[in-house]
Length: 417
Image 1 (cartoon, one colour):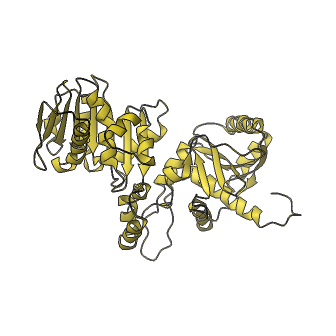
Image 2: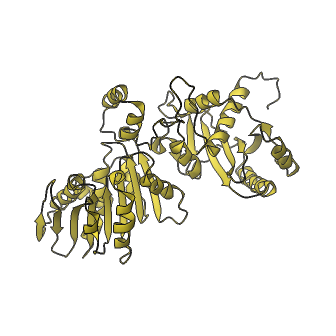
Image 3: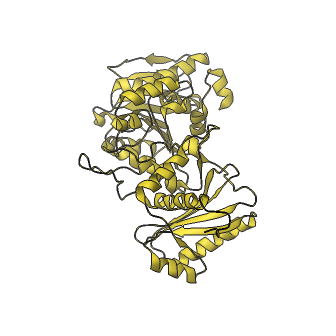
């Protein structure tokens, strides 16, 4: 695809390139305004249009909101010197249409009357500003259009609260079969957007609105707890511990709620690397202990030293049971507000411009909880607290950051934890 991009004068920035690199059948692209999601969606289906007798739709909540992707596709075809056999630009008030000489069709449609979307079978589908489409539009009128030809779909949007698009986004984070994959970016992940413009918007917009429209966050009325987190900045593929690293573990107990264990280390610059996660419901403590011991052995095989582990301080019985299984833990510090600040400080850029915390792509649940963790709605003047939801891996991370902070202040002669 990189050679094709040169012919159509398209130079995807890092976020767009990451999106294009996925081979998933269903791609969810959630991004702040002006990230370039409409352009990326149009370029994503360009090879489909060039591939033969194919049929695809751009569908938006209105004709106007489906038009940008359609026009980006048309411009790319013109850059290649390819003229449609038939075309019609319905503008903001009607459908637009392209028919190429080899039989490829592309239509731009409105979902305002969804029953008009019935009937056709599709090779590809782009949902434009999908957060403003109703769940029924996708589930009842569009999804089945892709079944006959095993068509591909791109869902591109700026978020709008925790609606059905948020569910689709979460599906793409945890799909182990690889059929769905999700991406989320902020406006400032587009290097063509000036930092001054972003700063101006941050100063003038309510925090929740800024986080949604610029940060690409699925905000609730009270907002995200960690708006600083970005997959593009904080997640890394192939993240490995430096040779000789001390591996720390942090545990949060659960049975109906998930049991969590995180493995992490610090690099030579003091940056925290979260390397692996174990998140599982409905398993016994001996079963969890076996998984932890096996993962410890994998890190030992890399030349690492297994260091201390901290766990939920309210789980004295659980800690005792794990100890009999060979997994010893210390009670964690559980001061909520202070722990949140310690995690937030790690997320911020350091002097070298890189954040103080990196998360391995092997930790999809931690990444998803970073994005979903939200403040509870509280009366005016009351202290803000997070909702008790989407917080299990984050509780473990908070325990770990508090323990590392405590260790840093100890004297050399004191025992390490």
